[in-house]
Length: 229
Ligand code: B12
Image 1 (spheres, rainbow, N blue to C red):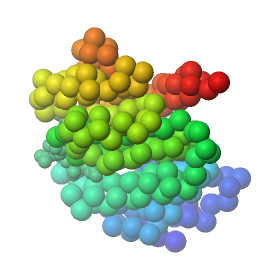
Image 2 (image 1 turned 90 degrees about the vertical axis):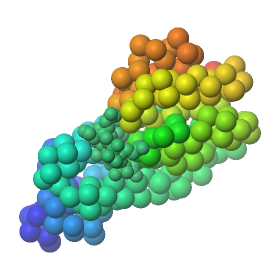
Image 3 (image 1 turned 180 degrees about the horizontal axis):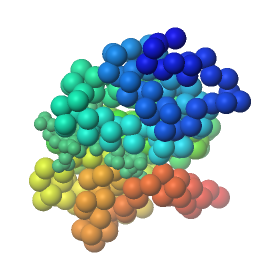
């Protein structure tokens, strides 16, 4: 047991730690660069609370805290990269653990050109996989034309995680171009802190904005329901 987590690693399911305890333990483990215990702590939390709750109450707040600590110089880039890598692994493995049934609706998830923040996209992919969707996860930083071409093979919903908005017009341009290239019956959904910052402009461009997991689940169920016989 790592000194950073105390008794957390030996906790039984009946007294599983809540999200705030997991968050604090994860920060301490990141500081100690204890990759194995960090991985185990976050995996147990994801399995115990379910992927949607894990994303909303552990992964996203942890990443925001990591960002604040990193910005303030209290966390090194190596410590930040460790948290990012572990969360990304958990999300991708969750996605791969589910085989969609034949005829399951398909989701494409990526981030727009210029945005290298991939973890939100991977976590959204994991939520969709648990919901029974086939997920085409294309990583980060993809130009609109590439996304549109990849969506041509029967994708019902294109979702983009928008985290970094350095140039509003550039991001809006990418999303408008993508909307114009996608068939009208393919929905385009954007989420993440950057999408929230563009929430006034995006609906007029035909892009739906959902920044909560409840909103994501609602959109997945609505689109899946609309396509079923
Ligand atoms: C990890 C990280 C990195 C890593 C990314 C590693 C990786 N493989 O992804 C690295 C080191 C590469 C990086 C680089 C940079 N980063 Co950075 N990074 C972060 C950090 C700490 C976490 C990002 C993240 O994953 N957030 C978690 C997301 C998932 O949370 P969220 O956006 O709130 O999303 C929630 C919901 O909206 C929903 N959601 C997310 N996506 C979607 C999608 C859909 C469809 C739906 C429905 C919902 C949904 O899920 C979450 C659940 O609540 C943030 C801090 C922060 N506050 O986020 C900074 C941050 C995003 N980075 C920032 C900056 C400035 C940079 C750099 C410019 C730094 C530099 N000088 O080089 C570069 C830019 C790189 C680029 N071109 O993209 C700034 C951005 C500010 C801005 N103007 O937007 C932040 C906010 C840090 C800060 N406070 O300054 N970064």
